[in-house]
Structure formats: structure tokens, C-alpha cells
Length: 403
Image (cartoon, rainbow, N blue to C red; front, side):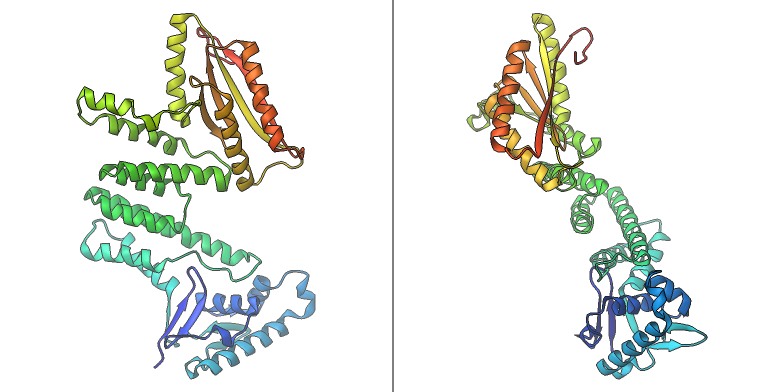
């Protein structure tokens, strides 16, 4: 008896006795998708009309798709039989329907994954057996249900989304159970594995950063924070969630809460490598705190503070591609660091915007600085496809709004 493994998560492959047999079927994406569809519905007859609706567009239905389907099924049968005699009668025909023969001994990863999900979802406690089942889920789900086609067929996309959602829900549940036992090291491992599947998942990133922080790995937590915020801006072109941005403040508070003596604090404050000649760059959550502090200081000194908002826009299309926009924003940051003073503060407000605090400055000086920034920006981007828009106004201490 042959040992047959069908892989659909992350890639599509059929392995008989340790050898892939997909090469026997050829490169026809429609044949591969039909084969996948029938295997996923193993033991369930699928009518010819259903298969025609799934695999042939309205325009293609005028070309006698029933005959094309019959020919395709015949070729798949013949190809699989050449690969191994175990595939004899692999696709059964009856009453204007086709069905993958359930008597063929196949280990289908999707079926195994769903069986394991059914088992763990019925459990309330994290026993050793349940832990192993969760680990098996992590190992089996090596990627989303593969398409193997340039066209995103509706049926496979919807099934893929369902499996992806079920995977994440079970990962979340596993993490919750691990938190009850305080197993931070395992939470870190689980999050890293799951983030390979869904890099931008907010909960997974927060859980990973929190577990690193709780296990005393603050530097690693900070590195993960910087990685995820950079990825949001660079690849999605959006700002990370408030929860992710606020994690930075909680991490800083954790560092500051450690008991130490005044000399240690002084030594830390005057580290030469921390001194920067340009403006201060920080995350927006810190930017807001600096604003409040500056506002109090300026109120006592009866000075003004100005707020500038710089926005990068495309002149030829609605949206700049995230990777291109990220490169532009990094260049704009270099310009800002060169043009602004030590006492100024810069924060990335969104994927295409920087917010700047300019304390103790006049309108005229502020416009000079901003115009200098614009001049340097347009020296770099001379093709007129990108523009830099700025808003600039003073903040009234009694009623802090941009004027």
C-alpha cells in the first residue's frame, strides 16, 4: 500500500512514497485547481454543472465546457495512474457528477489541520496533550491555501480566508492559555512562527513584544517594535495601531522603573553616543508628551510654539506605492535633520506625514525653515510627480489649536 501525502497549505503537492508526482499532471493551472477542488471535497459528489460554474467563466461557457471538463478529468486520471497504480479509479463518475475516491489512502494536510482544530477548540485547559496538538497545528499550517494560478478563483480565496482565520483564532487561544501559565518563552516561539504566516497581525506583534518585555528582553522588544512600525509604513503605507505605538511608552516606563542610584542615571543621561546635533526624532506617543511639556515651559516664559505638518503627495496618481513612499520619507527625514535645530522635535504622524514642534520661533523664522526644507526636497525630486505640502501655525497656550 502506497503512502500518499497531499500538501495544500503553503504549496500544492502530491507525494507518493516520498516522491512528488505533480510533474505527471503538467502545468495546466485549471487541471491542478480541479484536482485540488475534488480532493478537498473527497467523498462528496460534485455535479458537472457546479464544476462548470466554478472553473469556467460566462464567456468560456459557449465553448462546450462539459466536454472540456470530461477531457480534463480523463487526463488527470491517466496521468495519476502513470504515477502510481494506487490512483486507479481516483476520480469516480456517477450521475453527472465527479468525486475524489475516498478509498484512496491520502493524508491531506487541510483535513488533518481541521481535525486538530476541532480537538483543541473543545478543550478548556492546556494539558500536555492539548499543547502537543497546538504545536502540530503550528507545524502543519506552513502557509495559506495555495492558489497555483494567476487568477484568484473565488472558491479557493474564500476557503483560504476561512482556514487563515481559523488558524489565527487557535493561535490566539494557545497564547491565552500559555499566558495563564506564564510561559513567556513559548509565547515568543508561537508568535514568531505565526508572524511568518501573518506578518502584520496586530495581536501577534503585541503579544510578542509583551512576552519579550515580561521575560526581561527589553532590547529585543524594542527591536521588534521598530521592525513592525517600519514594516507598516514601508509595505502597507499606513500608521501602526495606537496599541502598537503606545507600547513604546510602556517599554520606556519599564526601563525607568528599575531601581538605581543617581550617579548611574547621570552617566546614562550624558552618554556621548546619544547626543545628536540635529532635531529630536521620536514616536508620536512620545511627541505628544513632549508637546505637553513644551507647552507648560513656554507658558511660564510667555513664548510661542509652532506646529508644522509636512505631507508628501503624488501629482500624477491617487497614492504613491508604499515602498517608494517610504524611500521618499526617509530622504525627507534626512533633510529635516539637516535643517532643524536641536530643540525641535520630529515625529512621523502617518505614512506620508511628519509633525514638527518648533518652540521659541517666530512666523518669519518658521517660514524660512520650512521653505529651506522644501527647496532641498525639490532638489532631490525634480520630476514634478511628487510634491511637498506644509501647514504651519502657532499654538496658543490658552487654547492649543493650530491658527
